[in-house]
Structure formats: C-alpha cells, structure tokens
Image 1 (tube, rainbow, N blue to C red):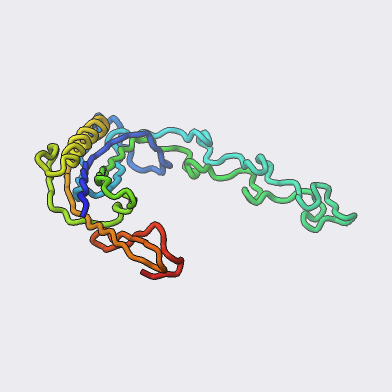
Image 2 (cartoon, helix red, strand yellow):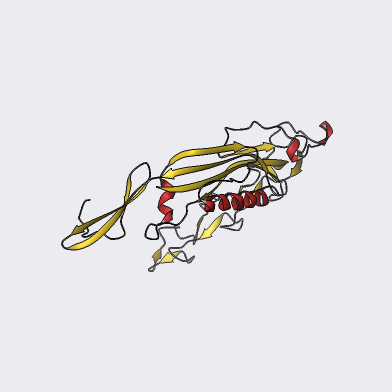
Amino acid sequence: MVYRYRLETYTETRTSAWQFEPYNGQMVDGPQYGMSPPPWDIPVSLPQMYSVKVEKIRVPHSSFVKVCHKCQGCGRTRCASCFGRGMKRCTFCHGHGRARNKRCTSCHGRGRKRCLRCRGDGYKTCSVCHGAQNLLHFIQLTVTWKNNISDFIPDRQPDFPDKKFEKVSGDPFFIDENVLVYPIQGFPDQEICDVSTKLIHEHLYRFTSTSRILQQRQTIELVPLTHAFYSYSGKDYSFFVYGMENKVFTSKYPTTCTIL
C-alpha cells in the first residue's frame, strides 16, 4: 500500500473580449439601455462542484452596429482566385486556345475558362458579414470553471513509475473539504504533511490572482501496490499489481507472448 495525497481547487475565471456577428436586424442592446456591468457582477448559474464547464455570455448594453470592415458595406468582396475578372487562364492550353496544334477542347479555343470559385461573377459573398453589409459588435464574457488537481505519492518503489498511479483509484480514508482547506498536521507520514502545506500555498498563490476559488478538497488515499517475484526458465523476474482495479505492470516480460 502507498499513500496518495490529492489537492483539488475548484476555480472560476472570467475573461471578456470583443466579438461580432452579421447584423440582420436583430435587437441592439446598446449603451442607451444602461451601463455595461463589470465581469464579476454578471449573474451566472454555478455548475456542479468540481465539474469542468465553459459558458459564453453576451455582456448587457455593450452592443453596437458598424459597417463590415472587410467588404466596406458592399456585402461582397473581389474573388481572390480570378482577381474580379470572372475568368481564368485555361490550364490545359496555358491560355493559347490551342493544344497539340488543335483547338483546345477544354476552353473551346478561348484560352480562358469561367472561374469556379466565384462562378464567373468576379465577386464572392463577404466571408465576414455573409452579405449582411453590417456587423453587430458586442463584448463577450467567457466564464470557465475548472478543477485544478495536484497529486503526490511518496517515491517508495523506485522500480515502479509513479505515472501509472494516475489511471487507477485508491481507498480514500481522509477527506477534508471547505472553501479553503488548512494544511494537514499530525499525520504519521510527515512527508504528506509537508506536501499538503506546500501545495495549498502554491494553489493559493497561483489561482487567487486570476481566478475566484469556489471550493477546495484534499484527500489521502491508500492505493494498493504489490511487488511479486517469480522464476521462469531459471531466471528471476518480478511484476507489480496496483490500484483498486488490480492492474499489472512489469518492465520486462520473459517472452513477448507470455500471459501472466
């Protein structure tokens, strides 16, 4: 058995940025309806604790309409493939109208073919406003809920890679949960106490400057780990059985087709 200490810090982060969409006559919630509230004053529904979620919200009273910056309000832009001509040089006869001393069958002797990108029009619907000519600009608030996890397992088995523990579960016998948890004291393994103090301070320093801490949880688990030894063809080998799932790990099999 090995101890695994885990600290979880559930945070909420809010960032805002300007966004736009084609304006097709929808309502414009602009400054005439009031001042835009600060990011942390906008009400949102809190998801289930420790779940990961991203929600995008349009900030009230931040919208306004502006002419599309790409097409300058035309709704169309010049085709980049034919440069607005509507025709392109025939690639079969290279624009000569003839190939192998015969009339080109691809362009019918014209040396040019209709541009497939714009269908011969020379212009395409604006990719930004989609032909609406105007854009609705607004501030978009992005709210991110994230569970930040830090694990620690004392390195008592140098032959066993600690990363294997990440995909298995253990038996939690100590659970401490609060808005902010305090470092563990008096645990028989002093290394767990020291790591608890270190990680709690690290999480506070890392997350309080950019996010809001909603909840913290620290646990100590007993993760099964058994080191088994055996002999095969006169040679000694070993393997590990770990986790509540009884997964098996060995650094070297006797043969590639052996099933333990």
